[in-house]
Length: 458
Ligand SMILES: Cc1cc2nc3c(=O)[nH]c(=O)nc-3n(C[C@H](O)[C@H](O)[C@H](O)COP(=O)(O)OP(=O)(O)OC[C@H]3O[C@@H](n4cnc5c(N)ncnc54)[C@H](O)[C@@H]3O)c2cc1C
Image (cartoon, rainbow, N blue to C red):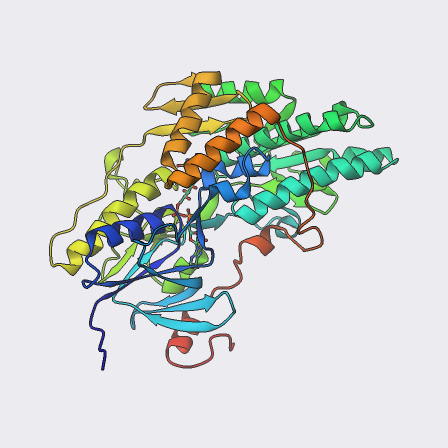
């Protein structure tokens, strides 16, 4: 009889944190030392920072979806599904597979890296009428949606409908929202040349944020530069303003303005995956509260990192500081977390995570960008070269690098054909449809499932 006695390491989430951790475990652990399993709903790792370029059509969706099965060396067992609850006491993770079966997966070590979801507020109509910018499907959908608005405006003889279809609202003045507004505005600016019946002056983009500054982490000067680029392109930036309510054909701002629009893109921050709440363990602003070793105090063999975890920011040297939710940290935490799992397994001491932020790069489309690598402020072409160079180098596989470079070159040389594919045109596809936030169990339902009861009862 084949009795498996190897420790079982379960990694949840195939993002920057999860995949980085799995690859390190595969490299550093002998196959006989432990079994590694990865739970992920998708068969790829998404390179999120380039998502706005997929939405604007500069990159194809495939070029930033990095395969999890590229090499024969990848020996990890992959469960296609999502973790919907974790019972720390019995060391069981409850998984909903992509065929909607609910299975219990026991573990000896669990590495939680499910990332984050779009942070929403209790604003009337928001989740029913806004798009996010967090998944590949969303980015591809938004591109189609924006081109659809041009097609419908072009076909309409009703001036009010034309005006509404040609107004677009992006909420969130962080790097994700700013890049999204900038890249999509460039898409409509270039596309409208193919619609001789449309008055380009009718196209209006709004970028709004409740904060008084755009991307405050860039500093005053670069934040202002980014704002100047946006204003020059005709994007109306409104600071100190948010959304009071959202409907299918109009959005009301908190300053009283009512903007007729069919396009509301919500990128106002992220919050840890709802999976974290199922643990019933301490959190910091929703992120699992872990030590600088990325383990959970009081629970042997539980590690968490990336956007889902509040990892102390040791390099900052400030009491209570936690690492911001960035790919830069997630990628680096992955290596330390994997090393710490291995150290624990082998009875050795773990090491703390410390990384000094390398700065920020913000691609505003075309030749516009602002970036602050290692504290050096750059704008225009040099900033764009740094932004693209940084992302290109950070792509994990050679084939992804080749695809992205080819797409950039092709786009620069041949431009875009602005084709509306219509793949998902008749499916409901707003914030709540893309991020599956209603799939998780309560801690009580997790216990019921682990004890053999029915998780969805009650
Ligand atoms: C538009 C945009 C632009 C950005 N630009 C930058 C940038 O320029 N620089 C930067 O440093 N950061 C940037 N970020 C932030 C960065 O992408 C995140 O901080 C980073 O992805 C976090 O890594 P992660 O591994 O924790 O999460 P993710 O990369 O989001 O990975 C989480 C993974 O877990 C999976 N998952 C989710 N729930 C479950 C579940 N229940 N069970 C199993 N799997 C699950 C998801 O499908 C995903 O594969 C950007 C983010 C966005 C949205």
